Amino acid sequence: MRPAPNSPTTDLRLAAIDHARRIVIQEREALTVNGLSPWVQRSWQRCLSFGFQPGEAVHFDLLSQAEMHRTMDANRQLVQTARPLLEKLGQAISGTDYFAILTNANGVVVDVNGQIDRSDRRASLITRIGVDLSESKIGTNAIGSALAEHQPVWLHRGEHFFNETSHYSCAGAPLFGPNGACVGMLDVTGIDAVERPELKHLVAQCASKIENALLLSKTHSLMIRLNWPGNTMGSDGDGMLCLDTDGMVMGANTIARQMVPNLTTPNLGAVHVSELFGVPAEFLFDAVRRSDPGIEIPLWSGLRLQALPVERRYEERQTAGAVRPMVAQQRPLKDIETALIHKAVEQARGNVTAAARALGISRATVYRKIGQKIQPR
Image (tube, rainbow, N blue to C red; front, side, top):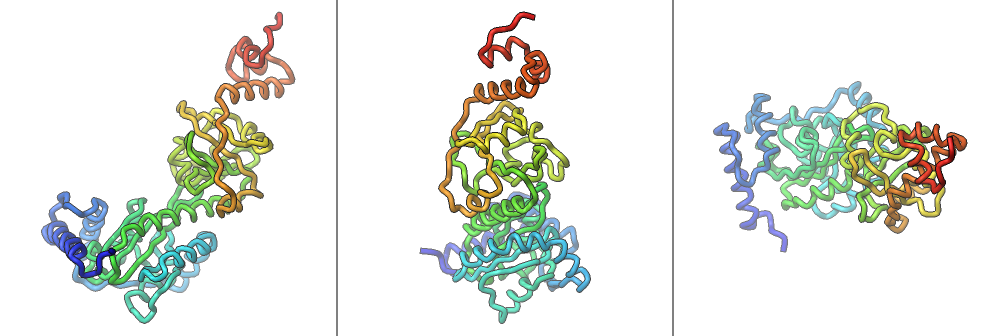
């Protein structure tokens, strides 16, 4: 059975939070407190550095009309792309006393969804489009903390800095755009609600779907799904990389950035796919035309990934889960090397010496790989 709001389990949790508040906020002790996430303590300490006091009034300020227009124009793509998924999230949490909030990278609300009790001032205040819910405005909350920490968070009642915001329980996850920069965050909030830390997983999962949708909304020629060998491909757990016709990387999702070292830096600038993998761009584009497009490609670190190049016309079906997940057939690395050598020889119009020079290998290696005898000089 789930614990009721006044159950012994809940009472113990709230007592632990009160104890932590007394140590960190009142006594200003920067110590590790059992039951308190380190990021909560960091947020409280930032609030203290702002000069905040827990008992003071909280002002839920709206942007000016001019700022509102600029903010909504700047985040139009985010709102339009996220809305269908925000609606699904609202449906998933219906009946739980929680609702969904989408903000920009500054913590300003740009969209909401779910069952919102507008007669409750506490709900109405934080679900107005244009209200600033950043940490520097309303203290510790899931929105400000997710944006500051760049990780999913769960926050329950007194873990909020201000007494006035201690009625809220919320989960939040940051949203990263195709270039790796944070573009906003996704939040679910309840008021005097039962603690549901599992909502952090739900929000993080939905945030990942929004990131993938933002990536696919960019103009590109080829999308490549990535995963480690042995894993099933075709799900939201894949890394995703988008290329233009020349093989330049147009964007990647967070999972791909975790898999591929050269993609870890946000706003990295122009990167060619050949800088990421030990195969030329042509090899990836050619794979799409094969009956079995699944391939295995090497990272420059020596590790290997399985890859599944996907044409634009099939992206929507795969992203919506309308097709059966696939396991890309792992093509042996020696086969990939042989295919590359054949292609280099073809591009050199049969000149093995030129192909070997372009590949940085010996003529003997070229002949051995393509199964021919060394020709006399």
